[in-house]
Length: 331
Image 1 (cartoon, rainbow, N blue to C red):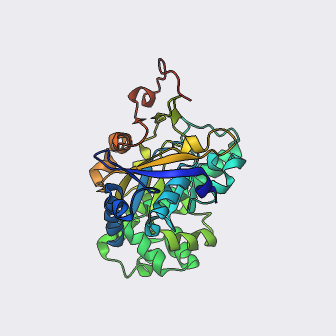
Image 2 (image 1 turned 90 degrees about the vertical axis):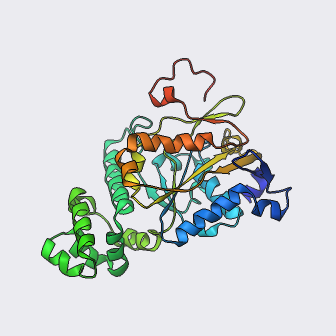
Image 3 (image 1 turned 45 degrees about the vertical axis):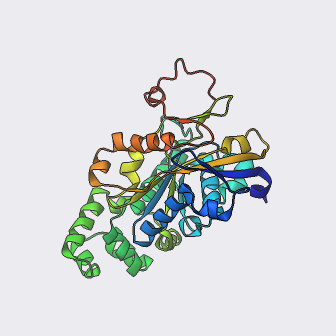
């Protein structure tokens, strides 16, 4: 109901800036658009076993909700019907957003960057930090670990993986190749599995088992982008560590540029507006990209900003460097 009432139209913008209207153009025009063809390409990669990270910017508090909503509207339930969304606590801080915040798929709650959001309650910050480490540990886990999760119930996993002891682990992980075992053991030890997953409960374990191969929605800004009076968008500071924290070699990034969310969620009341969607070519993450995450994480956001859309989206190096002096008219 909220979508039908508040989204006037969805405009698909191709890499040649050609615009296709969801409401007014033909089904053939939609199906042949660059946006839909690229989403099919991402679907093929997912079907081939790649984990897909749909990465976007945060124009409007409901960024994850609108991305999920428009991809489903275009017929890509396979990408978003059961997707996972990494969010910070701010997603739940505004009652107006309650409906949208509850419709972003399976939530992985994390602690926002201290450069963008300060948590003043120390016990809450500690709890969020522990939760963020669990989130990152599970999402980043090598395929060998995901294979064990597929085969193990909760208690077996806790006894043989979390409460790690090498002889017992080797027996429980007998189905893995030796190289897989060695890689997984290195990961478990480097990430201090006993401490990090000590409070992992059975409900979360079983949910993760169900959704661990589903696409992830990731919005690295942590809070909504700046907008000016003309409606143009400037990204906020981005902590590039998201690439090192969540992605693995072989994962696929799908850059998404969705605008119009701030027009709909401007103030305390929702207002009808157009959404514009452009999608970049999906590409595979390499080990060297993760090693150089401080550069490559920002390059993801630059790629998103460069996608044509019905509004201008800008990645500003001055903002990224922490210098807003001379930048006026942004809110």
